[in-house]
Length: 362
Image (tube, rainbow, N blue to C red):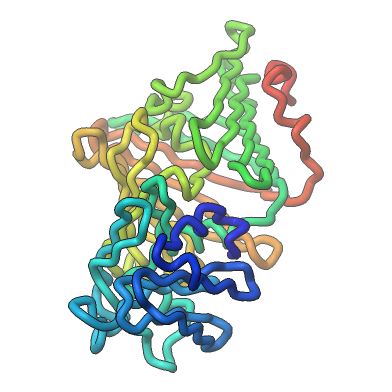
């Protein structure tokens, strides 16, 4: 996970530390703020930058680890197993308000880095990206393209169900968000409906919906992306890929969810038109897979919960949940997505995601 995947990471170097920036062979940059002498240390191929007397430091490597030593910011005696503190981005520089020490030699350096107090990547424009989210995103890079079958089960408050058969195609785009195309095959009243999404790392996503009954392609307005997708409890914005840059992040805690040890983080959408003010995400510590997402509406009231079930690994790397369940706590409705027949590297290209041919999607 070098800086090429996170271009804005270079913006972390403070003005006072630019002349002392150190670039490791992997291309990641560690920078010290205000008066620290740069001391790169490697342990099990995870370099950490430590600045004696520095107000803040950010380490270089797969998992950035910020350490503060000296003065009123002394980290001595704090274990990475204790609750991490906060980090703030102010004036384009990383300001550290809480601190951590490196874990014991016996602790996995990956986990120690993520659990430390200031495991943060930032950018000068004010976004903050938590290393946990960055790592989860990085582990799903490189699949190229995929296809899958999906059954959408809609459940009303009374428990009555209706089912829809869908085919989903996905194309990974280098340097941007994924493209996806969903084609509805049944029942008859929605057959031929096609939904196309161009997710973007920055800026608004592009989404189009083809409705065969109207024989036209409808562009989904950014102001309407909080609306329900095809009558389900998933919003249009839930269908787009979860790019790291779409949120700001805060570490909350660690806890066990359904027998799995998880990190719990809070993320807040950058898009002012999002239907959510914040989301809490449970990510398992072993494989960095989402286990649960809890959504809060614009009034900060509990809205929905999404859970992931029956993960399977493909190509010895990519994990996919076979079942996803969304429950709307305000309406009592729910939607289940049951995934089947995943295939990767099937040869899809940009031509298979052309908005001008949505009505001919097969």
